Image 1 (tube, rainbow, N blue to C red):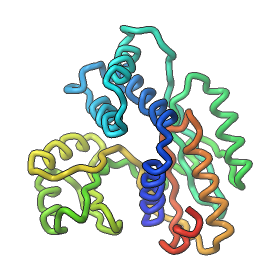
Image 2 (cartoon, rainbow, N blue to C red):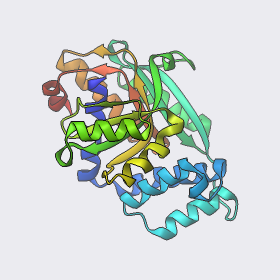
Image 3 (tube, rainbow, N blue to C red):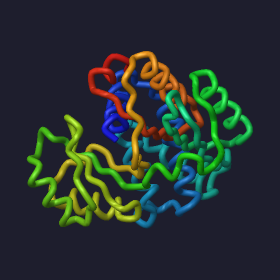
Amino acid sequence: MAGHSKWHNIRHKKAKMDAKRGQMFTKIIREITVAARQGGGDPEFNPRLRIAIEKAKKANMPVENIERAIKRGTGELEGVSYEEVVYEGYGPEGVAIIVECLTDNRNRTTGEVRHIFTKHGGNLGSSGCVSFLFEEKGVILVPKDKYDEETVFEKAIEAGAEDVVTDDEEFYEIRTEPKELYTVKEALEKEGLEIEKAELTRIPTTTVEIKDEETATKLMKLLDALEDNDDVQKVYSNFEMSQQLMEKVS
């Protein structure tokens, strides 16, 4: 689980430095469109849309882009129709991988995802082959340099969170039931806590330990290639490796 968390934090930092704004905007716009289509265009009554809009604002997306994406989702504007597709497979050493996509062409996306798995030493599996190894949770990140552990834990539990994980160097990871994510987030913000990120995620219940650099490099290239695909929204994996090895191959 630690490896999973560290990998996502490294990717988060890289995204800031690389500033792949075009690709980032594409993914966020798709999420806003689908969220509006499924739950309506009013963020007050659509938690998924609220989270997507917040992500867009953090990425400095122009307001007009956000509004157009919402209108495409609600049908007020014409646009491409996206569907949610989830792929499951294995990386090197049998590492479990789940890939969440939003696509306007399932056949194209399936071919591209399968090619990425094969090219980097993995293989695409059938639906359900690894999803049982993950739990769906809400995760809220709070910066460690601003609050002590006792304060965060107390406020999180009072707000309705399940647990607070402190493994990461930079952030407290507050975990919630998926349906409670936005309720807990709002309660924490009312208590004055700064929220770095809030999202629905999949947390591995068991991990595969990676010890050698060659295997780690293959795995990181596979995960990076999946995340760099335009149709891919999120990638989850159940690997674990040391911080030293993680930094070598990231």
